[in-house]
Length: 560
Image 1 (cartoon, rainbow, N blue to C red):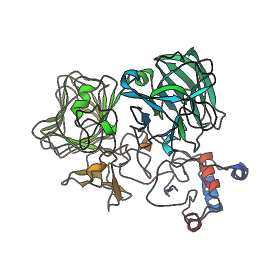
Image 2: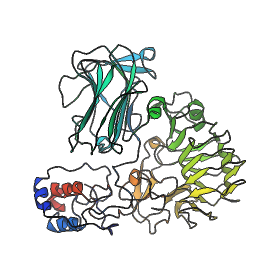
Image 3: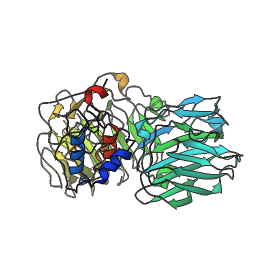
Image 4: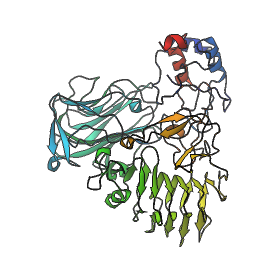
């Protein structure tokens, strides 16, 4: 069950018409919950009485069609939801949704794989199942990609699917098919190229809800496209690689490698040229290949040295005592869970000195205990959600540099927070101990949980994350939640146009400043829109569905 915060609404709307009664009678389904909460409050109990009844319907009617100023949002910010490298196992290197093998799949060696050190060969009836998880309930846009190798099939064959929600397959003519289901009827697109020629082909399918189209790609080129619109359907089916729970017999007969699922639209460049590298200070080793949490490098610099332009580096929780140089690469380096700490006592922690531009991004890090937190020379990188604290110098930029800083905190840096010898610092929606001009900037104590002890999570009366201190949980970001007696002014103070759904619920529908902003470990605050049961930023039929599903249910009975 999800908690519905009883807070003041943001916008005004019109009353819910008489159609409510008919709709209520017909509603039989509910959107899946994405975010679990520490307090169990009954879904649809909008007035907090402990029972879903006419009072909640009246409250929903009064708030009908109200919405937040920014939004609505669909569950979470753009991210890689699942990644199956298939290098001898079905481990999900992007999350926790590992696959289970069925039948007698065979693992092929690296020399016979498309990428990495291996691939899986499925022989008509073999498949990999992945248990249903709310992360797979993609109601907005999505991107699927995979490497495939097969001969012309005698019937349709599925690459990856989730029942009738979405499916990427090939037909008996060897051409790709991508279909999506949804309340508005779904959509389908059929490719033009024969991809079943016993050659490795990289294929991808994209549903772009915002631009109203569904697209197929083969080997970096557009294969086909059609118009499409509306929300995607969701279900509780398993995800299958090599088959489909909804259509018997559509088995894959051939090899599959490097399967990825995103909850957003990916560009051709991102699909066909991006690699993801992992770093784990506790469990990683620089002798590993960096492909997945279990094969992570130990140092950030090793990952940067290995990466190419367009790649992403995921840094798992831990303290990284090293100097980091971006080496002119257009890459994104970000923390993968609870924000990692970079420190270089007596040295410069993070360096941009090789002409880095907007494609070089540093995000969600604590940078502390160094001679200088960030040094920029002749470069213009992007710095988002960094907490630069307890250094001699915070950020210094020289020789025409103009780093773009947002949603960050600069505090207690002995000799200065920000310096630029050429331009006025371009800093917005940030907390700076020595105030700097910029939209949304503040200069007030950020109320760190324990700055002396190195805990820079933000104090919150609603909930603050505490690491459990177990090294073995470095990859999972393990911990628990506590409540403080005061709330940091940096909570719900970052750029209001940023998607807040990466933060756990409840949140104030606005991202926090600092290293933990936009992540599941961000300090919490009450959701501001009453009756928004699925937290998408608008009160609509989906919230009515939640109420209908729990109609006349009360807390005592429903929690037994």
